[in-house]
Length: 212
Image 1 (cartoon, helix red, strand yellow):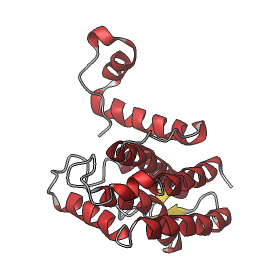
Image 2: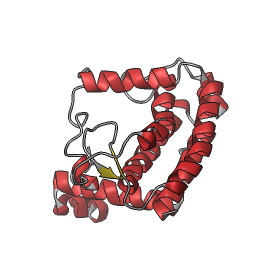
Image 3: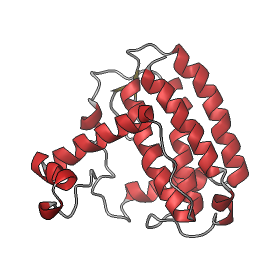
Image 4: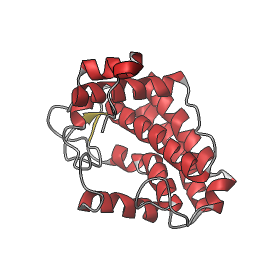
């Protein structure tokens, strides 16, 4: 199994741990740190980065050349969309739907999906193509899993901040690909100079180098 697949399984396991924190259940119906999300919806959206992946793997491999990892983000509809745009409403509704059974059931869903994914990912060829939920287009499986690593890392922070618990630290095998992806997207959006200044020169750093 590739290093990215192993890293993804580590990150997916961490989702069950965070969603299972008592602080999440205690704040389930409260507003989350992201506008429009409840804590339940955030937990569901985070969990979706695990529980929806088996369905992606079971779908037929798409036709066409694969889209490069960073280019994927030039195609997704949610970047730059208004809070009430259809795509963002659908994302929030999807999170609430995944979390609909409550926190205990959600943790069990995640754990079952991780167990299933251990077997599925071990069987997939190195050149397997998948169609991401944001598609329709083709991506290499490992590139798709890097997008899930990013989602898990970012939304773990959202959920942890929402309920007042420490954000989980991810191992270098998880955080490294996420940092590389966010760094590339930040450079595409703001340019090299802005990113260099933000990371190394406080006296002339730009206000933001967010990737999205």
